[in-house]
Image (cartoon, rainbow, N blue to C red; front, side, top):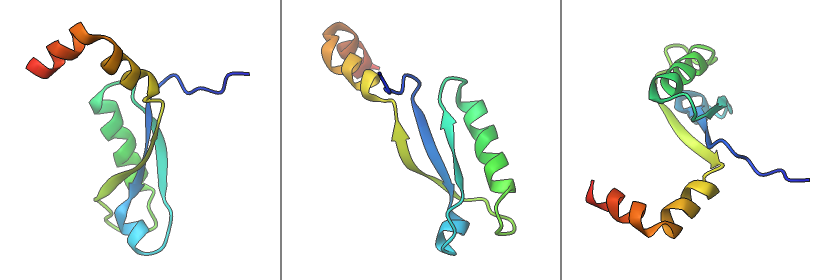
Length: 84
């Protein structure tokens, strides 16, 4: 059975909660673009037990293995990315 994550995702956490000793956050898949990621972050912060929470951080990530593989093993694309 293959348990490999195919869609890159990040775990975003509320820093106000974290600093108060509370683990509060959510996993966000990165397949819908930056606006969708920020919508998930905003929704997560609104659910925080800490009033007016606004700071957040990425605490974990998964599914980037394929991205790294493509970057290191496709030299033509790798060179193009470096030029950007």
